Image 1 (cartoon, helix red, strand yellow):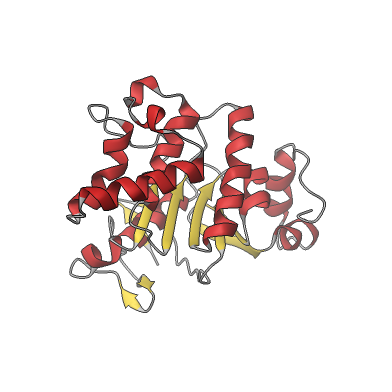
Image 2: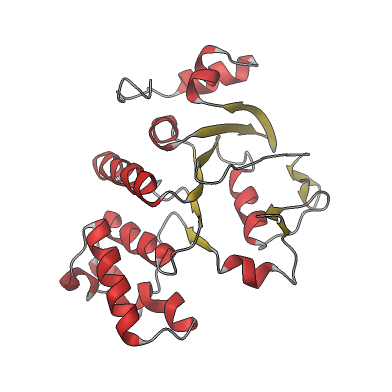
Length: 242
């Protein structure tokens, strides 16, 4: 894919393949093109060159609506509507599909248990939630229709380190349990190591290297890869991931 915004090249001949049932992490600093990839997958943007295919179907203006129903999307701040309760925020996708109330209540109860939020918490408005709680609500909404694909754009970026670490662990467990195909955008190496099956490191709209964390750490293809990995202090992670 190639994508430009005026004279600026946001993506420069980028090719990616995300295997079904894996967590594919797009890693890189701000402006590297990571979020643009997600917007192209969602059909919010169209490339100047190249195609985006989801399960073999090309993303176009004509196919976008049907494809988006198969995707859950989580943004950094949760993207919650402030005038709706947490419950109503989560219920929105199902109501748009005309689900009966009983089915909505059952699904929300299941998701609430999954992410550790009870009925009292779901009755609150977004302003009454902590950052971590708001992100859990955003994740519940993304999972409401049980989509096969999850797209997460810096979902934990605005959280404090302790809450972020807790949610990273929780997300890892959820990804393993649900077995969905996930594309996760982050600039955090620890997050990429903990959650990613495959890591694609990007800079200036290009793919620098793709593989496991071990591939990037032990077999860097350019000095940039080593500089990026050593620029952050890698917090302790489990031995198997290392």
